[in-house]
Image 1 (cartoon, rainbow, N blue to C red):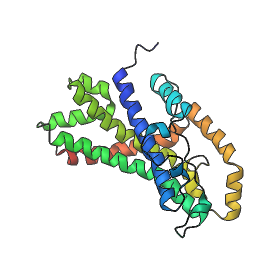
Image 2: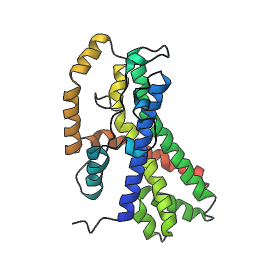
Image 3: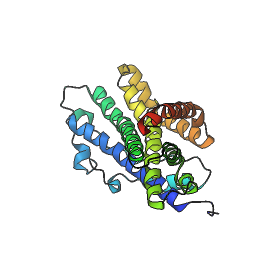
Amino acid sequence: MFDHISIPSLLVSYVALLFSLSIHEASHASAAYYLGDDTAERLGRMTLNPLAHMDFFGTFLFPILGMTTSIPMIGWAKPVPVSPHRFTRGVTMRGGYALVSAAGPASNVVLSVVALLVLCFSLRFSVPSDLTRWSWFVGAMNGFESLERLKVEPTTALFLALGGRLVMVNFGLAIFNLLPVGPLDGGGILRGFLSPRAAQWFDAHVQHMYVVLLILVFVGGLNFILGPLFSAFLLVLQWVAPTLLGV
């Protein structure tokens, strides 16, 4: 049943996801702490330790199923608790909550860019051949098995594959979480711009949005929403990467 699974590819993808989720949740906690709410900090959530953020289903079971089967699964961590009434930085409760919500996706965008820069400059200053540099970069974006087929030394292949996964996973987490749906960060951001009456309606329908989101995930509907964004991102990479790689 699992003969087709590459253990190195699975480990690289899972490590990238675990680290990215930890960055995401720690950024929520740090933003709340900066605004004056130390709820998450007192509960030990302002940390990069993945054990503090792990959810059995969202951080272990579902991601593993998604990586080892054809079932479309997503990953998530335990939500960071936020108490908007504790904000002391001169922001409204809804405005502050919107900022805290935005911190998670913003951290994933930053991590995706940093991973891209590290990956490209590592190749630029360690691989003399332009052609090899480009092929290894493409292999890194496609995963460990692609680098294996290019006869890249295993340790180097693991490093490059991890860089590629960090670029893609963090971009995916950012755009997914920015969807303006109640349970996601995009919902929290949107709520900060709604009138009190609209926000009340929004809160009353969060559970319905959650059901719709799950249905979209399981039937593959998110591909129609996120697919074009990933395609645009790959086009940007094809334009930016050669300059960073020096090819």
